[in-house]
Length: 268
Image (cartoon, rainbow, N blue to C red):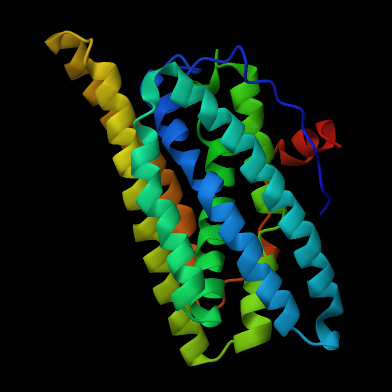
């Protein structure tokens, strides 16, 4: 792992950065997640680092790099999201507020076990999302704005790169016995529902704004394109995420998707 500092320029990018606008809006909705979850991740992992003993020095060093990577993810997506606000989608911010507040509540009121397990759930989702983006979505990326594609490929490749940090942190603090396993699975399901319900609301808003200016026929085609996209991503994700449920799940054994190493090398 290493910290990379990409210099993305979103000044000329458009919200519909891919030929299939519903695809672009789906990932635009996803972009609200790192803007709020990454600061939460960093704060949780700082607490984890303090709780780990000297026997986990290597993991503590990995957490340092992990946190610095997450800070960059947040910074870049916040900048990207500001472009969306200025482009007619300012209503996103109202949907983001309760989501942001949830993380403040988790930090204030939930146990460290819950927060670490939730973070691991998100990281499991992130590594799966990286595989899907690199391996399954070429038809949607053809003709897309390269700056937006690079943002997502860089981010998701780094998510895959640091995929086992939260997993190892949870294991170091809480072990890998039956209760630790069941709690990890419960927290994973909680994270999937929590994050998924938020992004669904934002995607519905974004597509809703777009469809206000469409004819009935155009809206019908848009809805159909969205259904096809959702089915494709759901099927590709389900195959990978089911592996998280295994008591033998170990993200460190996962193999990077073709193109991830080359992409990361471009950014240092």
